[in-house]
Image (cartoon, rainbow, N blue to C red):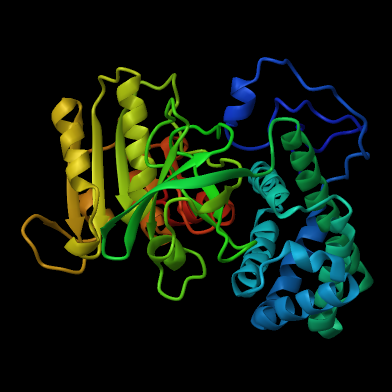
Length: 436
């Protein structure tokens, strides 16, 4: 496997902080201090071999059916051997266990896709700063992870497999550590913010506006992780529903998920004056200032928030090219923000807005967003921005590929655990794309 030069190379010199491994960073874009100093670091690890990749994937086939037990065992021995790390994790580990499992699956899936592997691990490294993760924590996690895999792999575990996992984890830890170190030169790990406005928008949906203590840098279309005082260490991802404002406030759309740890409290319990914490902005679903393509935007549920931000940013830039927005929900009751989008379309001749529901018969467009999207077009001269559930994003991307949009002009933000889901989307889309 050949790994790209920005992270894996000979020697022990680190790249500058202004060369992030993934995604646009509004902090580096806004910085005028010049490149950060290049410092010495551990020698870069060699890329994984084809044999190591095969061993890793074969081992996951063995432990996959026992994945739930593996993650429970991993956290049990991690907290027993290293009790000092327990404070880095939320009290309820259900979501965390699932993220660990999906993280492992993504890493193994991407080991022969260096660009996406580096992007994925870089996202994770920067994001883990908010947990208080330090470079010294990685050996403990690696030790317990390998012991957990060895226990459940049984006879399939061998010295060669142990060496392959050790190598793979070393690569991942190095990328994550480097990304976190570089990010620390650009800004804080978290931003404290006060809720200054809380408005119920409809059924289990709230519009929440916060004011950070210091300006929060982001680009329209990106998302932030949010921690509440009611569930410490439990972070959830939400996009600002607007382009950056002069007053630095941020407005999020939050739907209460049944059984959720965070969203129900934000919707039903949060009030003005409450404090939250924000992790650094992430995401690649942003406007390319050099693009002159028409735009098609597809928003499912609260995935409308980043689409609204993108349209607002396009208007600020004096856009004249056509923008087609499709907004969808299961029922009319869950469909929100449509009036705001229609008012924007009245102010901007280049903006067209259509809405559809999939689980209710009402006048207008009916069906899932991918189905409705397929009834319009053609889209081959457009660039696409997709935001919502992973299944919707994947299906919509497949339709757009069939209509001729090149894969590099399809931008997406899945909105579950973005850095986890987004890493695999290009491969999912490729697998479902029509063959020539």
